[in-house]
Length: 378
Length: 49
Image (cartoon, rainbow over all chains, first blue to last red; front, side):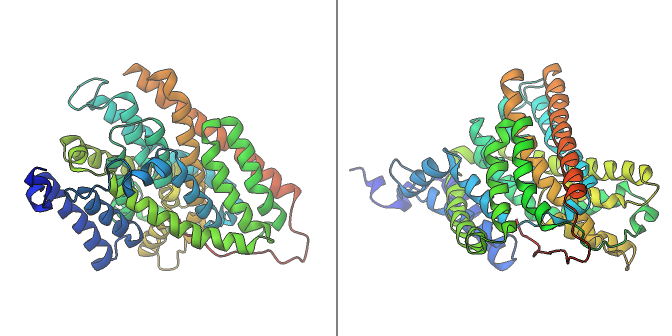
């Protein structure tokens, strides 16, 4: 046995050392700064475990390799997470305000805008980076602001940048309160931001709440069949929540299932960040593309909100368009905060929650759409 | 880049088309299954994703 394989420190490369530092940084951000600790602590730990010399966790049969094969390569983890997410989401705000669906749709332009830019920089025109059509689509999906959908699409498309894409997607969700407000302020006037949208008394029947997830599966499944696994699991979770007879299962989906899969998913995603895959110029570009995706999605949502502001006779505050990207419920909270800055009596939270939950559905539809379209265009 | 342009247009068309049908479905559900007069609407806890 070579002596390099006796002690890990003898096999430590500078690349692995950098990755250990990145893993430590994520753990620090999660614990000391409380930045998405549920995600960053498992991911950071996974990075450290994967890059520990001679640890063997990513070798065939190693823990992280087994988890990746079982949960990521099969797309199992993102789908299980979606059952929990569906059980957590209250679609009541959306059902009260069906028009907010279009804000969720408009915000998906972030996916396609980032795709277009990535493809332009890659194989599409400039050839500055090794971005194929499928890589560009996978990078664009960061704009869905939806971790499970990002994992699902990047894995199915077989992007070589899947690990970077997933980490970028989760990182930017934590940065929504920093990325969105300047864009929202830049694209709206003080008068628009001050617009008060009156609160509504809940007027959705329990039967509507129960039927909505089933109808959504049918509509989305028929129009964007590749989205069926994602929308199916999301709405199954929501059906358990709204059925009124599955409280125990709903709680299990929201807590035990979501927590266990989050632990496994975080570790596995971190475990995908081996130094040789992560430390390359494309990773930095993917992170920049992630900002572009979130910014374009936010801008598209706000601009569509402005269209609705005019079309509705100035009754819809365009700020709620920013909640169309699906980072739930952070975006809705950001809208509430920016609205309150302009007018202390302006409570936009429930209106923004409608757009935010619409964005969750829209991001899944967009994921299904790109999966269906790639074979025709790539 | 032409194929990328068509890809973007087709993708957004599917997103808007699907969600347009969904909005119609929601309007129909809200119209046909209105809460009965006097019934207290059920509210549920806000979610986290």
